[in-house]
Amino acid sequence: MAARSDVVLARNPHAHVSIRALRGEDSIEELTKLLHRAHASLARIGLNFTAADQTVETTRRRVEHGQCFVAAQDGQLVGTILVNSVVPNPLGELFDRPRTASIHQFGVAPHCRDRGVGSLLLAHAEAWVKKLGFSEVALDTAASAPQLVAFYVRRGYRSVSSVQWSGKNYRSIIMSKDLRAQA
Image 1 (cartoon, rainbow, N blue to C red):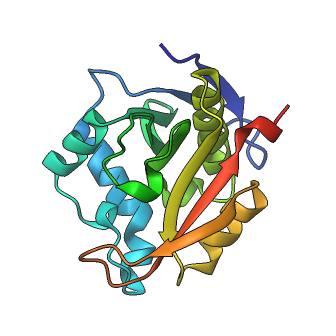
Image 2 (spheres, rainbow, N blue to C red):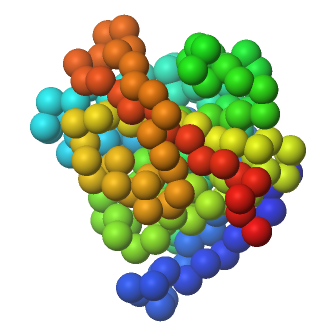
């Protein structure tokens, strides 16, 4: 079981957020709605991210393929990240390298953006896979969403490849971070 992290957000000293593993009593419907809200701005600019409109069943199926962590504040889910540490990875050969975990279904509620929630979730996921013995973590994001690419670059990710996933109306940048370089 993942360790629980209670963190005070930088811009609101009274807003406590806990990062924890998704629990059986957590609502997949609530998680799906969070993902829809978190990706709505991307959908408005025409990017068809899966999480922008996925069904509850899709959320459930994706969660079953990895370890889902959530950020909770006052009993409400405000962020999520899914880590896949299984090889072969369901996303295919670009993520299918030994000792490489991958991140998916990452989102933060709009009212919690720019307060460190996304950084906390990402750091938690990275620490978790490193503890499992993985040396690298990979993800993909839309090349046409420079704010997302910049977010990952600031956190030590580098572009390693690009791909046009079937059914997506944007090209994805595959990004990777070497966890061995972290202290």
